[in-house]
Image (cartoon, rainbow, N blue to C red; front, side):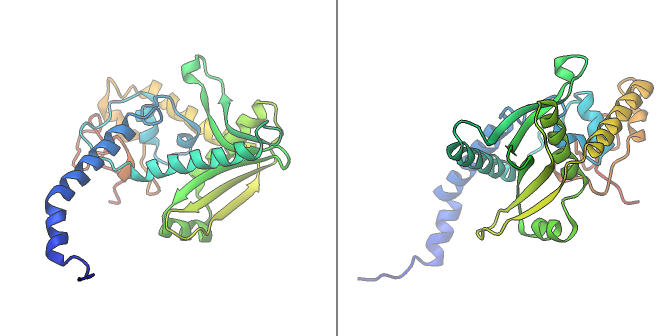
Length: 263
């Protein structure tokens, strides 16, 4: 009896036959389900988006501008993040079932809008009442984790953490610190935690920038004047690859953005 592993020919046949068809079916199912999730269909601006360095993406979002159709954006990183958030929520709810110490996935309002749809609100991943710390989980790849260790989390994540701190303060809590917990996507559990004092001024400055973008929309009316889109700058720090308004070959910003241009 032979206990040899299947040869390359067998593996290749599986890759091009039933295995490949099943892989495509699973991929399609994951993408369609992820893109139809409530978080993916969110229309209002949430705390994670306020600090987006790309003013143009924020303007598109504010106007609920049509996303580029047919874009096959890979949601796998987002799916992993959602799964880890659910696992971490269960962990802390189990440890503190009465919520005496931990508030898990606590819904907070960062700022009230003219209407409920204009509220800036979201769910803070974790709040520790004993230490006054707002926690935010981030699942990240190897290269990004190394960058965060050496340079810190960047403005968008810092802003998000402090916006949740502001939301917690609005809810009657006493936040004193914000912490972003970077959990590695690879197989070794070696997290990095960035901690800072709660800085309401960081949150307020980001909200003021968002208001300035709204004011620019009102004054330039890009819906009626498509050339006005050029007045909303992109940023080299923007994650253009994941942007729902990215159209790489676009010459008309009303139909999509080609992404940040270095020239």
